[in-house]
View 1: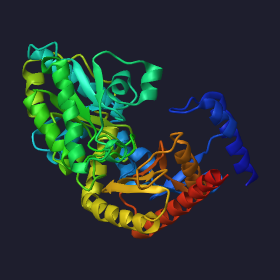
View 2 (view 1 turned 90 degrees about the vertical axis):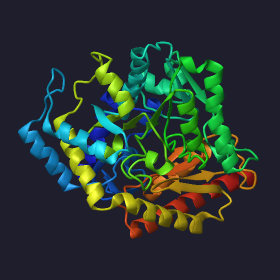
View 3 (view 1 turned 180 degrees about the vertical axis):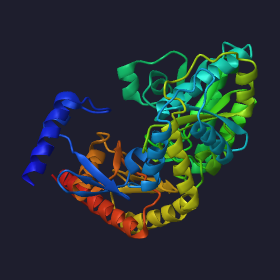
View 4 (view 1 turned 120 degrees about the horizontal axis):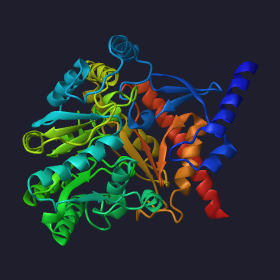
Length: 459
């Protein structure tokens, strides 16, 4: 045990000395120290102190098939022994990349028949945005450069992806690239006012149309949106929203890019969020669940109407990555998709998601702190509110959410705080008993948070 303690202390010291973390206040991290995750199995993580933690976020929305899947380890090892790496430049390919491209075409919405591979969701978004601009250049419309995104949208951390997203702090630190604009998100709980969700869905969609008319459709290349805005707080659009977006993009000759990085591979109870909402994309970006996070991989799926122009008219496309179509990642992705399909994880995400929300409503529906519990499949959110009746937010945004997040971690549950919204997306393999445990831990944490808020108000 002493050796384990010494190893953990050494790792913490080395981490502070040499590891620069993503999305981190490093001064605060160095003061607190890092938590060292040592192993994982199913839906549980284990840290260096022996704590067992239910991962209600599936890593970062990605571990669809659960932790500890030896089939995935073996698929990667087998391919690594055969061909660990070669690039897909210079008119070469490899069998896993070809097989995966074919498989993605089979499971994607109709007409999405070509896959471009990258490593991360950020790279996939960057690739889709560049493709959109090259597409319009090729068709003799070089002025069509502007990308319309949404407030609270998240499209990765590359400069193009961050510019397309609507995260204010990322814009403040990184600066805004030209030719990116943002419109109202379909966030009824926070932005809907006195409108019904159905009315607000139409209203939010028509903010895209108004922006297109303001800018001139001849200057707009694409609209990009997540089917459900995950990192923005699991913003689930009203059912009226996406059909109106389909119409607006088609009538104004604007490419529609569906960012499926979080929603893809069963998370919504359909293979893709586009399937769930009836989105008609010209391109789809995907990552995360494609390998259940076991190895880095992402893809852009191109609809035939885009691919045919790029293939037949664009000439050489000066874009790609050293690891595009990496054979080991692609082999693992093929096995991961096989697991998702063979084990019925897509359909079970619907039934398990309904069960999880029902149990959360039973446990927390009467809590004065909980304004709304929402979700689709196995992705959801719990809105923490200062006033349930008026949907009023807290004065200092994010403070209550941070308190709740810390209680969750203390109690052995990973849920993420987005402002004062607690979001969750457990592995698709979560069992009913594990759902019960997740609900108990969430209730305990939210009750503890309410006790803090209540005592502060009383004092």
